[in-house]
Amino acid sequence: MVLFGFLVRRVLVEGSSMEPAFQPGDRLTAFRRWRRVRVGDVVVLRDPRDPRRWILKRCVARVGGSLEVRGDNAAASTDSREFGLVHDRDITYLVPPSS
Image (cartoon, rainbow, N blue to C red; front, side, top):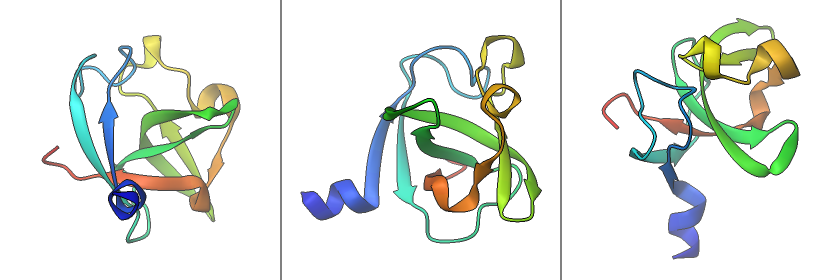
């Protein structure tokens, strides 16, 4: 069970920041990051403002070792526009495209 929690994380979407791709209440499976994050990837990371929380965002740009992450619904998203770029190593999980 511990290994499962380390390698795989079940994510419950809360809020509308990732609409229309993901709706509140959607359940996703995210996998421990196994490769470099690419533009377009949906990622799970600790909230830079409150490390007790996890957030779901999309990588929209790579600037050296840093990433810009944003919600698909810009009007309802708190993302890199507010808290700045995140370091590549801060991305813990990737959500595969078919989730």
